[in-house]
Length: 379
Ligand SMILES: *Cc1c(COP(=O)(O)O)cnc(C)c1O
Image 1 (cartoon, rainbow, N blue to C red):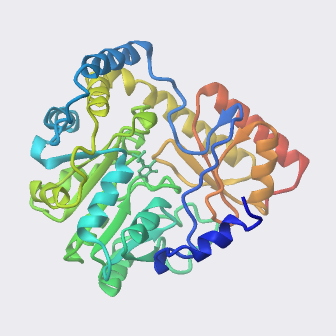
Image 2 (cartoon, rainbow, N blue to C red):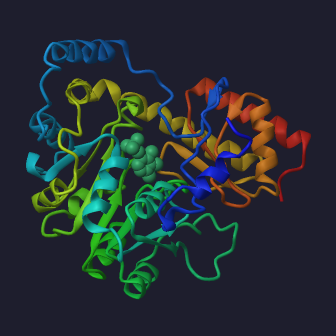
Image 3 (spheres, protein in one colour):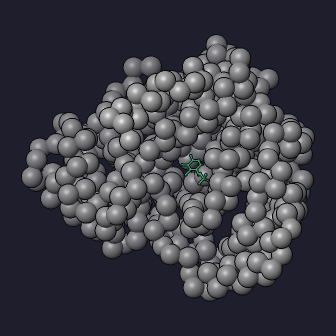
């Protein structure tokens, strides 16, 4: 190898101009005792579900000489059953994680010369996928003009502000995220309806965390009838504790899935993935058993963090964003030195932590209290 740095070689490669200077997705994957930084489900897959997945995969193994069902028909039927709301299999699409679902949507409906709008702070992959597929990203704003930085509702999206931004930007695709990552905020369905009416583009509601929402929080699935440009995306990575299997899906008008068929790679969902996902769905009751426990630890984090003098955002997800930090990077390092990995989402004064098992949550809260005693990191 020469002494030349990788960055120097990269600068010389004939990379697309619009990718120069970009940063890849990079949540640290560190081997520490308590990992609460990527909103995974901290609970292992229960033994009976793991056994069912192994059996389903075993049955496929002898037939791996053949391509998988390109239309993953049975999986779509199982997903439609799980979702309810009278959804039919031809309204469902799945891929290797909802990230791939979103990428396929952006390949079909975004692309060069088109603009995509999201409301920051939101999921960091929405702009990365947008730019990767050649469209232009526009960062919209949450909250209301003049809201105080310690207002717990500063990350809400409101009808008038949402409509104004959509009408101004005229996006081909609008991202809504409910509950929103990293703020935890769920959306009022009035905002989704108004956003839809304000555009003739696609509106994607990313509901990756919907299973953790507090009671009374409605899903945008209820809005699908009569709205052919509305897409609701979901994942098995969070509540289903299946992040490693890479299964995400969407519900929409059947014509949306026809649009995706124009860009998807044939056989993108392997037979093993389809079998594993179906076996997991047959046990969705057992898998979703952990959701209530996770919600309790989420609520415990909100209460405890507030008692420590910090400022948590209300959360409908399996994580909590908390503010009031004078130096979030110092606190992040201090927690890491105590074996606890949480997330710096690039929002000055804030950090995000996933709700873990009760033991992990307690270790985090103790480490947080110790860190705050050691160094005055609150404002
Ligand atoms: C974690 C997350 C996803 C899930 O991505 P997968 O590719 O399904 O693992 C999607 N959207 C948001 C907002 C997320 O936080």
